Image (cartoon, each protein chain N blue to C red):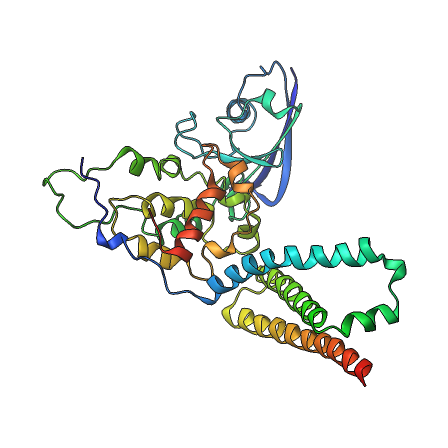
Length: 237
Length: 131
């Protein structure tokens, strides 16, 4: 099949100081090709200056989140046939400053992520001196939010984040959830305190864009609701 | 298997902030609006009908203390719910603490004034009828 690939371009190093789109008509595209394959083909055979992030190319590293036909996907996970269109428009994710072509400045995203102490806090010596045991139920309580790969597809699809870049965003709340509900962690109160601030969970309007965008199918809106409930009830079980 | 929960996880409720209270208010007022609005719609639009509502009907209705309280609550809760929603949306455009604080006060005063005028109209109409 033939596919028209439209890609957002902004590259001051290549003299492209104004945002614009480039188009390529690609022939013999297999419906099971991924959008990342098309981008790699264009970069390899048509325009070597085309810039985008990619690493593992298997939906694990979270490098290649992009806005494809108006929706956030990982370019390495979405197949051409899944888009139901012979014209594919690829843009950078929204809400973060564009550095070059499809590459955005992720630092505000990671700064927000770091603000909720996304690591295990427990200075006590385990009961047996070796391990902190957990029941299956206790592990399952936060299982869903362990799947996050920090691709920013959720945060950059959130209308609250587009409007207010200081909002911590869904990915940060998901990663706080992962530790808040971990029975081994001893600092859920600190994280809830941080998320109770004005730019915390209360900026969420329950739009569900994040849940729809998540390539790992994490129930993000539910996780945010659970954090809201934990703040109002003090219950983190 | 040991699955004890440590005391650091027992009481972790943060001190409520203004945002916590505003969020809870949205939920509580939303739940209260369901009976208030639906009873209002059922009576005014279905049982009585909009064409049967005239000045006499309004005067008779507001002669009853129960309906006075009901309509004042309906106005106050609906308007407060809407104003709080507007505040949330407007925060996207007012991003400094000072601007947000001022905006919140303006909306609150707006809510207070309109609710007061509405309540005065309801109670005043009843007082006039009794006189």
